[in-house]
Length: 475
Image (cartoon, rainbow, N blue to C red; front, top):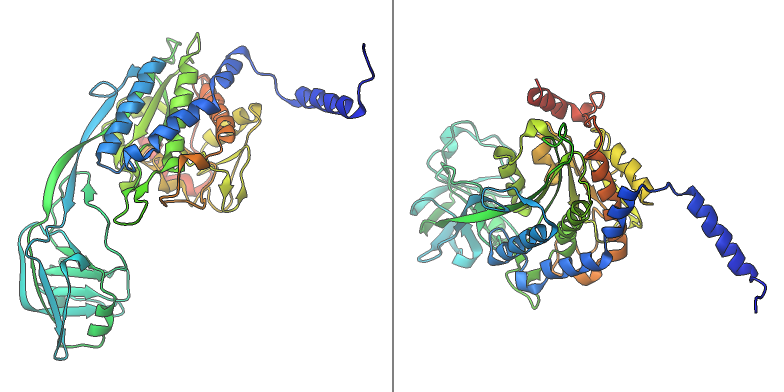
């Protein structure tokens, strides 16, 4: 028996009708992309990438290699073409250096006293055996300029300053700096550059007071050469071939980094799982790639999906890609990089269905994405404090340096577990992450479909260097 509709239910129905009328209508293509993105799928992928099994995905490490294989499997599952030099992998070699503490000894004398520095208080990577016996030790805080004559062939200890400029052509025998904690793992380099000056960091705070004001400081140090080995690392690359004969040889890139910090030197929980940074970005790239690949007709342009190694080591993977591109940079119209898109508990307040883009005024890409995101009910905006400040702090920088309009999208620039072992997959807001990914997917669809590529903003002074790079890329 039909009854009267409760007033509350009628009000809710009318509100739903009104909101639906305000939302932009999705095309069938857009609807298919939006419907494909799943919070459960994101949770499944991220819970593996950020699991203890992968031990923090340091560059390089077994965990990083496992993550690369998993990402490649997801690209294969989605039907993407392999785009690397070895299937889905773009291979590179890094040089890993670690201290060799066997036989290490170090003493510093001043004012008739002697202090010993233990092997586990020093981090030094000499290229050849280092042996200084009762050598002069120059103490500097940077307040007075150094001369070549005052430092050549001598050891220099920097106290009370993060770094000190040396005169051109200066050749000290050793440069030491004081730190509160030594590096927790090996040092990783994109190649094996020459090291004309040996440097060391010392974690012994009392040394600063010991040598303060001394004019007769001397050092004795014996150190074996650092252990050094080449290690293979891999970017992961999958290609979705475009459907338009006129545009399929132009490309739009979606990327993130899949590495993190690895293992802490000690503690009950030593694994930096890196769920939000940047397992969230990596899972999102896989999810969006799958959504676009599932379309019956692919977007007009080709889309390159990239996962970079070594972002935490100094953008190593994206810089390698920029030097060895898999598709022509002159035909790459834009890059969108994803960082920390899973946490909504940002330091500057909750971020629900919002995202910010670095370098918002640098090019057309942010406004294109903001317009597409609105269709998915997500607000993409300029964060006034962080938009420009963070532009150079992720893998978009490497592509921007080539002249390609490239930006990073982020939900929470700072969040409570940033670079802590507590950045775990259980703390991700998967429903919000799915909403942001739907917005990004629509933005990618738009970038891959528009005939006109985005441009750098020639009127915005901070973007000038990228405008100039674009002119060199497209003379």
